[in-house]
Length: 126
Image (cartoon, rainbow, N blue to C red; front, side, top):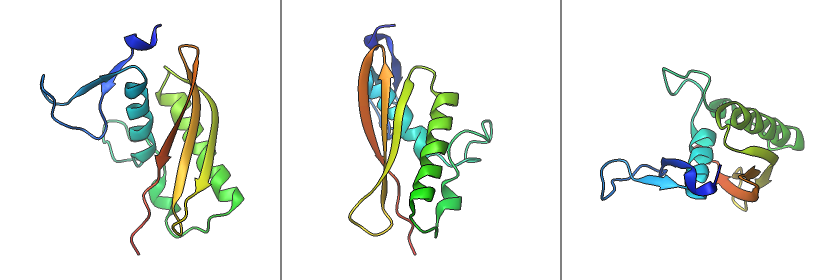
């Protein structure tokens, strides 16, 4: 499959000139798909209760190497289950400068091209 054959919807959703929502293709479509997959909480979509991550259970946890490995493992499993257009090469969780803020760095192969995308996890309001 050529990368130009990959179609999707822009994330976050936005109105487009051809209708709602704005379409995307290629690496933009894959990036939007991975971002939405990481940012959706399990149970948020009634028709797909297992889609997404257990983000709500991460609130108030200390950021340790074990915790970051758990997040990476859950992200990898979700992508491998729900995004068959990519092959996950690596998932890393990195801390940002603000306290408790994390980035998920996903490296994947799509149509023979290695790509990395960074998904910032939301910081809980305390």
